[in-house]
Amino acid sequence: MMKNDEQEIDVELSGKITPADIRNLRAKGAIHELKLSKLPTLTVKLAQALPALISVEQLWLWCDVTRKAMHHVIKTPGLRVLDILAIEGPGKLVGFADARSLEVFRANHYLKEEDVAEVLQAPSLIELGIQSATLSPPIVDMMLSHPRLAAVDMEGTEFDDAMALTLSASKKIHSLDIGATKITGTGLAHLTRMTQLKSLDLWATQVTIADLDLLTQLPQLEYLSLGNFDHMPSLDAAELIPKLEALPALNNLWLDGIKVDEQQEVRLRARFTRVNITYA
Image (cartoon, rainbow, N blue to C red; front, top):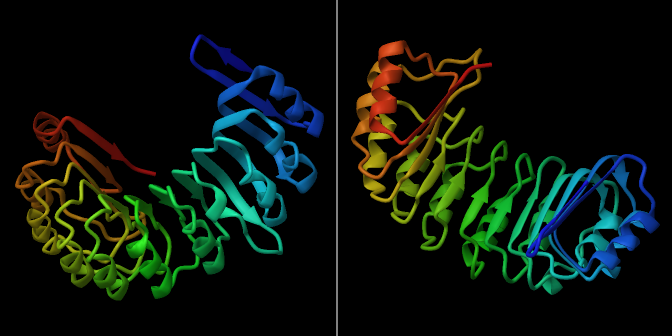
């Protein structure tokens, strides 16, 4: 599938593809978005073809990628956004310090601490997605010291109150996803030092409804995600809604697994620009 107009070329290759299929894309010139999907695994043999392309701004690998193949993926010319289903296999990631155009990196599952440390070597990195990765205090220190990092998704990691205390010194990070982590009200109190926060995901954490009063200390907070797994205790909508209405900048809300009746939903939709209410 290809979308071609005066400004952008988007390409998707799926199923059983060969290195030649990738190399042939060079004839198309600069590619805005390249998607490789429905592959069992992106191997070294396939990945070696990527650096031969003219340029790829956004690379979406909807498949598993071996760590050895990543040596070649990261050399794709012009790479600004790299989104990977999962990185697997032996070896170590290398070369991110030379990925000077890379601004967005997302890879969920199986990332080791040393993988995350290597990704943080990318000098232009703005957004980092590392759901379920192995996390440690030294990695949080690296996030804090990164010159450009502004958005971090750490859902399902070991992020806790002590790490929140460290990260709270950041004046650059404005988007934080810490759903399904070990954060509690104590950690949230630390994070309210980040008055620049515009987006916060607290889904499935130990933050209580009383702790949510702390959010009034975040004057720029525009997006908030709350809730819990459906089989776990969640927040009471009657108590929750007034606390949400007290947040002056909030305009985008996701409530997952929170029981909301028809009148409460009407009230929420009248107050906020975007409201997403979901259940399993």
